[in-house]
Image 1 (cartoon, each protein chain N blue to C red):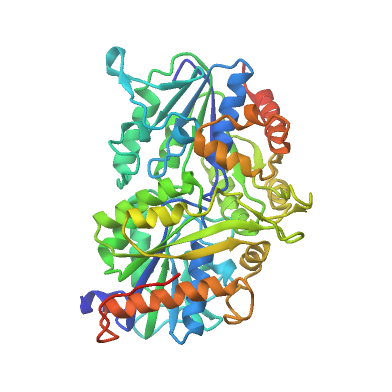
Image 2 (image 1 turned 30 degrees about the vertical axis):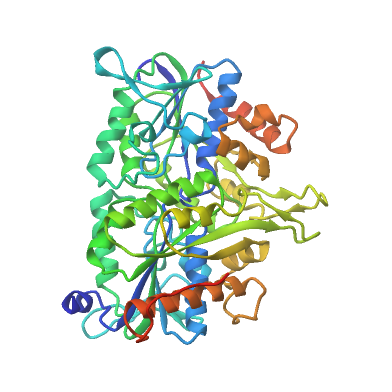
Length: 257
Length: 280
């Protein structure tokens, strides 16, 4: 981990707002801009990163000193519990201490090598995984968090707690992203605030956190993820890809080179 | 078992039903709230226990506000507040808005035990448990503490969601909780302007395939409309005015009726029933 220049933790108090989507899109975008990138998936119960990155079911090999060699895609190094499961649909029902040990191993026993940035995708909530991660990263320079919310109040209620958690544990906040922010109907071009609007911006204001931007819904993103295709590459003209790019540029500006 | 149920304030509860998904954000709480109201409006006395300690959504969805004080019985158990004719309890009713349970698994399990043991539900036909996402300590604790009559699994069509949902179902198999069926939420989005259907969360039908694979009933689909989100945010569930009170209510009532049949057949409340077959 000493050779990892920047650690970028992607969090949300709420499930299903698109943490893994945002984490993977950031990793893919940063790699495209010439950065050496790794992505670590510490969602032990519901690891989504391998599928989104198109590397589901790949094997992890052991390298020098018994350390794990991460799976690679387009030069991006990837690690997830999903690679270590016998069956992709196996449930991992571990109590806290076992999850902690696994996360610590992912941080210290993986051959990350020299990375410009390690993106860390987390599960929803403020529990074992988050506490262990923050404890392990404490004192590591250039660590920051991007918090993802949906626009609706039900999501903001939970994300509010996550922002408090970050402040409580001393995890610097790069900013807030509002995902699934509106849907432009391809038939009538009406922009529908599917999940409401404005919740993320208000939350950022309330907590004095940078608002990095909104990402609208594009149905092609869900299909791209299911197929492990890089969405922004496949549909660069889409409004969603442009918004992701804008957020990416702001985050890149906050990283140490 | 009666001693355990008495300890948990659930001795008067006929059926315990978990609403669950390993995946977050698929609409477990929305489904739990709407099913609870459907059960109640179909004549079943109902309660809803929000087991999501770190992201409790039930208070907002039921328009229940933070409790300034909680009434208790002589035995020291909390009496759950009510709205829309159902009893409900959530950690969200006891904490400030930005306060969360920042806690490791063992502490969360302790809190689960406290929530399970400190509420007097009285007599209920159905107590619904809105489960948190994932397959954590909390899920194990709940499965060990309670004899659940069944679990309803909620998913969206997207492969990323059904993948995690299958993990949750695998967990229920391992802890021997019977799965009563699968619900596909956010099946498609209906544009409120031109009423065109859009599959923003993947093509419909993935849930049906998953249900077949696990040999459990496919209970139904619920479309994604802005009204359902507005209802959740404003604390006025689409089912609260009855089956004909809103066009989105019908899918929930259809699913609720199927679940009532399944629960009553399990407990032998309806003698003579041998098998349940649903015609779609």
